[in-house]
Image 1 (tube, helix red, strand yellow):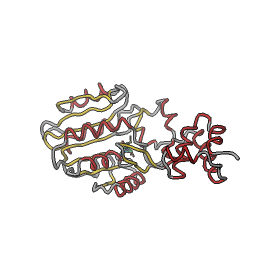
Image 2: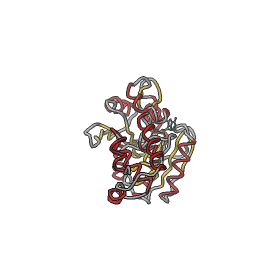
Image 3: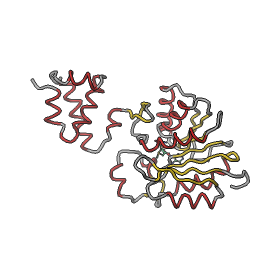
Image 4: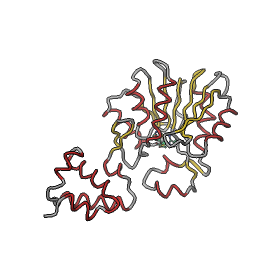
Length: 271
Ligand SMILES: C[S@@+](CC[C@H](N)C(=O)[O-])C[C@H]1O[C@@H](n2cnc3c(N)ncnc32)[C@H](O)[C@@H]1O
């Protein structure tokens, strides 16, 4: 008899951990329960499921796409290949939003993908009135499903950055695509949607649109919170200053890397 545990040890190689997580998800059981279950004989169905998953893992498919979900801000978000897998460092946007938002503020998230930022913030701060947008209709479907799952009242809209957005906001948040189109790191991200990663040759194209247009959509004293890539902080801060933002600060993620910039609108007449 070949047990599940023995199959994993014989076949899992460097993906043993991922396959164990998939096997647990297959049964819908906890880690502790799986310890007992893994002594059972492996069924043909489970063997096929894990063998198929192993092929995909070896091709570079991220575990989250195989599971169909990813945890972010201690919440489970449905993901598929139409959305970026939410990253732990992006939680910094939630922390800063909670800090900067006053009771009842309006919040606009641009490029919501799975909806992770907008939904986590709505769970944490139900007093806020949150609208989230994306250019990808397929991503908006995932965000809608996640909002339903987490029973969140957020408004989802289709828009190319600010193009279809009207009104002004106390907070504008975004984790835009910020990787340059020839960046070799993209080889490791090939399974995720390119529109979520790349916005042009320099990596600054989407960031520039946000910085140049945010003034027209922020209320006086409103805040802009943007995530960016490694090494982009100085350039972004310079651009924000040249667009008359104030209180411009960088914030580091848990790996001690500058990851987000916050800035404040001074006066409504700049734009
Ligand atoms: C880096 S992903 C962020 C996804 C999600 N907010 C997160 O943090 O996990 C960037 C998102 O911006 C969206 N996007 C790209 N170009 C856009 C555009 N021109 N207008 C609006 N959204 C855009 C992508 O579809 C993608 O969902």
